[in-house]
Length: 175
Image (cartoon, rainbow, N blue to C red; front, side):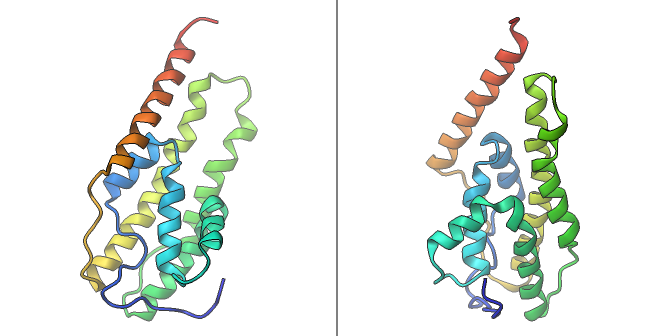
């Protein structure tokens, strides 16, 4: 990514200002699929919006790896506009990465439902990052948080709920 720091117009949001509650619900309900959209929107707003949508999509797909870079960019922008954030990008980035990758290495012979715990816990670093994005926007931008659930959001929640239900049923039923 370009090292040039492009500061968004004062009327434009920094990152993707969505409520922490919506972020947590969508992350857990969609089993992390919402993170792709969330990351894409953040990369679009934090980096050059004219950059290829394919490049932004690649960074969104690999959010487990690119999350740290996104947080560092957020810190740079915050410092540049005079509102430094107290945020440990390395700890949050490492936590998100480890939560997403380590459990699969150590969870042999456990019930299927246990595999759903790490994706739910991965919401914690994302929600901390979202709270910082919202803090920065509240202090420096006249932006409104996205608190509303669109029809697409409800479809995602519905599909996720079906998956959660099927996983619980498969776990509870005898073989």
